[in-house]
Each structure stands twice: as C-alpha cells, then as structure tokens.
Length: 559
Ligand code: BGC
Image 1: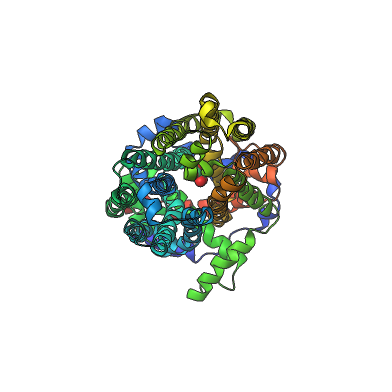
Image 2: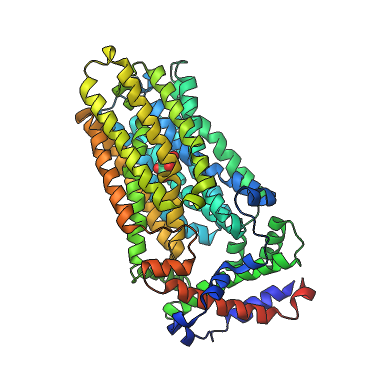
C-alpha cells in the first residue's frame, strides 16, 4: 500500500504545472474541461436522485445518520415556539416582547458564531471529530437550557446550543458531500433540508403533546429531549467512516483508499474506487497548487503560515467574478430569511392567536400542522428541483407568498378587534399561512442552500459558503429578535413588512439571479464573469494527468 504515500510525496514536491495555457482559457476544449471537472462521471454508472440513493445504501445510511445534525438544527429552532407559550414557563420567566425576541434569537447568534469557528476545527481535527465536539457543546447547552433556573441560564444555554447548531449546519453537508459519489451530491444537500424540517415537525408536536401536562415538565421535557438526538449522533458517528477528502488532506492516502472502497462497497483495486481516489487526490493537490501559486510566501512556513493561507483565502472572495457571486449568494440568504418564514417557525402560536385562534392548545395544534406542511412540501423540491429550475420556482413562490402575507394583513387589520364574530375569516388567514409555508418549503427553503452550494468555483467554495451560511444565521437572528416586537406594536404591519421584502425578492431574483439548473462550473463563469472555474478546470486537468502518470504501471500491483 505504500504507493499512495510515495505518490503523495512525489506530487507534493512537484510544482511544474503549466500555467501558460491558463492565460488562454477560451482555447481549451469546453466539453473536455467539463469532463475533467466532472471527474469520474464518465465511468460511473450515473444514477442520480432516488435511484442513486438506493444504489448506494451505505452512503445513503451514513448521510441519513449524519443528518441527525439537521434534526438538531430544526428541533432547536422549532421547540421554542411552543415552549414560550407554556404557562409555567411564562410564570417562571416573565418577559417583555423585546426580551422574548432576544431569548429566541440568541440561539441564532450562537449559530452565527459557531458557523465561523467550526471551519478551523473541521480541517484540524476532521469532520467526524468536529461533529463529536459539536454534540458535546450541544449537550452542555441543552442541559443548561433544560435545567435553567433563571433567565441568564436560559440565555446562556441557548447561546451555547446555538454554537453547536451553527457548527452542525456547516459540518453535516460538508461531511455528506465528501462521502457521496458526485451523482447524488445534490440529493444529499436536500436531505439536510428535509432533516431540518423533520426536526421542526417533531418539536412542534412534542410541544403540542406536552402542553396539557402543566408544570415545569411541560417545557423542561421538550428542551431536554433533544439531548437524546445529540447523544445518538455523538456516539453513533464513531461507527461511520472518516471523510476520505479530509484523510487525503492529512496525507493519509492509504486510509482514504480503504474508506472509499468501504463506501462504494467495492474492493480497493476496483477501477471505480481507484478512479475516485484519484479524483479526490486531484482536488487536494489542486488546493495545494492554488495556495502555492497565490501565497508562496506563506505555504510550508509552519503554523503561522497555515493561518495566513487560511485568512488570505478570504481575500480571493473580493476578486472580479467572485465578489458578485458572494453578494448574490448572501442576498439569497438574506431574502430567504426576510420571507418571514422563521417568524412562523419561532412564533407560530402567537401568530395564530393574533388571527383569532384563541387558546394555547388550538394554536399549538395549528402550529403542528405548519410542521407537517413544511416537511411534506420539501419532498417535491428534492424530486423536481432539477426539472423546474431554481429561478422560476423562487419567483413564483415570492409572488404567492407576498399575496398570502397581504391577505393575512388585510384580514387582521379588519377583524383583529372582533375575532369572536369572525372565526371564518380567522381560518381563511390560517389557510393562507399554510399556503405560504408550502411555497417556502418547495422553493426558498431548499433553493437558498442549493444555490449557494453551486455558484462558487472550487477554489473558494468552502470559504464563500461560510460567508453565505453566516449571512443566513445573522438574518435569522435579526428576524427572531424583531418579530415579537413588531407583532406587539405594528400587528398586521408585520405581514405587510414581509410582503414588501417578498416583492423585492421577486425583482431581485428576476434581475440578478441567473438560472443555474444543469449548468456546469464553467458555464457559471460565463454567467457571472471571470475565469476562475475555467482556470480551475485547466489546473485540475493538469493535476489529474500528473496523478495518472505517476500511478501508471504500479497502481494495480500496489493495491
Ligand atoms: C432555513 C431555516 C428555516 C427552515 C424552515 C431553512 O432553509 O434556513 O432558517 O427555519 O428552512 O424549514
């Protein structure tokens, strides 16, 4: 097995990539470049979607298991909506609307911080161990929340839990995408969104189920139940493989080969396994090449140099052809949050009460239905996203969602002082809120994440995504903070506020967001400008050729 290590060292110390050809990216044959970027597609039986998932049962199960991280994300976001309505909770922690907003949204602030910090650990100790670390932080935060004796503990607990949730929101898709064969990577990103909506769903129904038991248990139990998911994830992940991509980055090439063989359920000398091993190796070498090319002064200069290379990578995001994608990605996340969806996730019972559903159990029941619609309507996105396209789905959703918000605003404005005599109108509002949720679940929910994962070139994708993810959490935090204050002070104006952003989002998508369905990375360059992806393809081509040459002759005997 020593051949992998030898080649690793060999390739590592060669720097004679031919950069001259990169000055003329347009001279490169487009189809070939596409194949180079696609890597093993040509020889892999290309099932995608559901068929692809079924064909890869071990990867599928590993990805499903890892998506418990997404369940924690959704559960923690959703559980607070019912908890804050529990009588005992309100008596123990009396809060103004401003304080409620802060108590709800401090989780998102923690998530924002966590999504930044975890990037370092993900590279240093690996994806798997970072997931374990995040679950430990989660256990600590949830235990403090569940056992809170005062508001300070509640806030502290939610912030700590949030750090873990933010970290997992980055780690889980990263791990999933690194164990997945390319043809099912897209489905796995959607799997994470499904897990989030599933987490929200169960949290709503647990809240509903416990609302009548009264006393401290009614809110401590839902806050503590999430501990169980974290324990399962933290312990169970040990039984799953390391990310082969991370192993390779650590120079543990032989282990990476064994992991790929296990994931693909083929022997280590199977053509597909070796080909994929080469592709991952090429990606790792590609990154090293870019670093050496751009920051020769910092590469291989020890710890400090490593940190500098990491930091300088962010500077790349300001380059022509990249910065505009970063702005578009961040704005997509901004509009995803300013649709107002999380106003419902965090404050659904309050909102249902504000449209006339009196009594906490009826409003919690209506909230439970929100969870079901949100979960069920995410499935069409998983299946049809690549058929219908992102742009049209976002635009149609924005229009319908804006209409829903306007209808709810009008009904609330007309009848908010006399719901008793206008129950039917109250239910019409509820129906429009459900339509709103369904549209979010099929469009803005999943597409926000999918778009941000596909528009950036390879060389800066991880860093760019950390910026768009943190933009998402920051906007999420703002929504959690302002909505209770708005509901109290401007009542139906809250819905008008979100309707305005939905109208803006329609024009934003129409004018600035290109359709990315089925587009290759090179085509993204044509769309957004710049040559980053075309350059990347050319470099990748050279790296792959070099790896292939280095292995010709000895690979089969070595394995
Ligand atoms: C959003 C979350 C939201 C969830 C609702 C996700 O895409 O990022 O903020 O709570 O969808 O399903």
